[in-house]
Structures are given as structure tokens and as C-alpha cells.
Length: 309
Image (cartoon, rainbow, N blue to C red; front, side):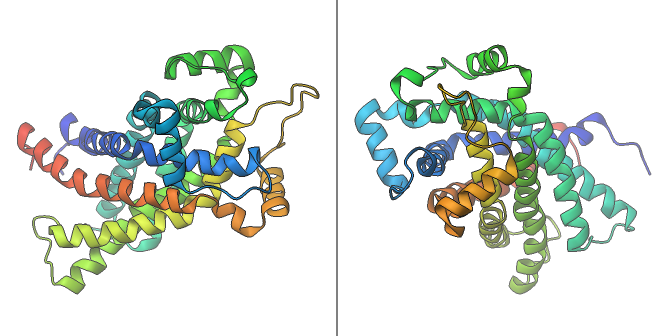
């Protein structure tokens, strides 16, 4: 087998990272609303969680249109690291597994394994940017006296490390790993499987890649499964990353993943794990569809520009 060129090896990482960054810029306002909905129950126990439209409208009214893009620099930084790694590694792992399977399509179990492995590795690399993103998005929800007023993503990263220790940049790592694994399985592994199923239903031979109708159908399935699988872990991750010590006692609201899950169950019930699902689905589905649809075009452009087959 001929040795792969650097351009070919880099292809899934460059194309995946580009698609993820583009998608994040498009759906950032929805992501911002999702985080605020998830934290509302913690900051306002017993009160009904407002819808994402209400949150965004209120932000624009009070702080101007630019407020819905608060933290977008952290979102871009996160996707350049996390998005590039999770999509690139999944494709690299899947291609290797397919190669080991004599070039035949791999089963869903192997796709799931690839999604879990790539998702967990990517999270370990990108968590500091995730911390910065959540801090930037949630800071204005805190009482005025307790706000950090971060200037940008780098200010959030350096101040968090300086004021709380380097370990604070990995706060919530455990649920973030679980979320990353669930997200990758729901989005990438399910997309690969749905693409085969939808292609057969539509009679798409996929000789030169999937047809647009196949891509759209598969990406719709992947958007839903990504949101469904990862929502509970995303909620716990947001709560743990945004928590601050009580000014009087110095105690954090949650001691860890299990304690956070137990408190949510006790105070908010099972539905509490899906608090903000409308905004989360509204973010996940378009995000997944934009990535999965654009990555095909980006990959074709990349191959054409570099003369790759």
C-alpha cells in the first residue's frame, strides 16, 4: 500500500476543523441561550425556565445585538482544537478500521468505538477552551458584585488559571468526556450508519460520495441522536464548569459528577436533565447538519486544490 502524503493524513483534521468552526459561528447565539437555560435552574430554583427565544430577545433588548455573540472567540478557539480533533480522529480511526476490515464497511459497533475514542481524546485536549466559553457565556448571569467581566477568551483562560489554579481549567472533565463520547457516537457514528441506511432507502449508489438528499436525511437523524445522547452530560458539565465557591462558606455547590446528578434529580426531577432541551436540540441539530453537509463540500474543495484522489 503506498504511503499517504501529509496532505492526505491532514485532510480529515483540516476539513473537519473548518466545518466545525464555521458551524459554531452560525449557531453561537443558540449555544449561548442553551447554556443560560441550563444554568437558570441552578441560579433560580423553583422558577420556570424561560425559552431560548425569550432569553435571546431579553439579551438583545438589554445589552444590544452583539451580546448574543458573547464568547464567540472562545467558541472558535474551542472548535479549532476540539472540533478538529474529534472529527479528524474519528475519520482517521474509522478509515483505519475499514482498512483492517479489507476495505469493507465497518459495523455500527466499530463506528461507536471510533466515536467514543475520538470524542474522549478530543475533550482532554479542548476542555480549557470549553471552560472559558462557559465562563464567558454565564458571567453576566451572576450578581453584579460577583461578575468577573472577562475581556476575551485569553483573559478568561489566564485569570481562571491564576485565580483558581491550573486545575480549574479542567473542572468538569469527567462529564465533559462522557458528553464528548456521547456526542461523537450520536453525531458521527450515527451519521455514518444513517448515511448507509438512507442511501439504500433512496437508491443512492454513493459511488462518488453521498447525494445531497442522502446527506440531508442522514444529518437530520444525526442531529437528533447527538442531542438525545449528550444532553444530560452537557447539563452536568455546564453546572460543574460554571459553579463558584460560596463567598461565605467557600464551599462549591457540587462536589463532583455524581453529587451534581443527585442534586439535579432531587431538586428538579428527571426532566431537569433535559432542561433547555429545546435550545440544545435547536443548537445540536443545525450544528450537526451544517458540519456534516459542509464537510463534504470542504473535503471536495480540499482534494481538488491539492490534487488528491
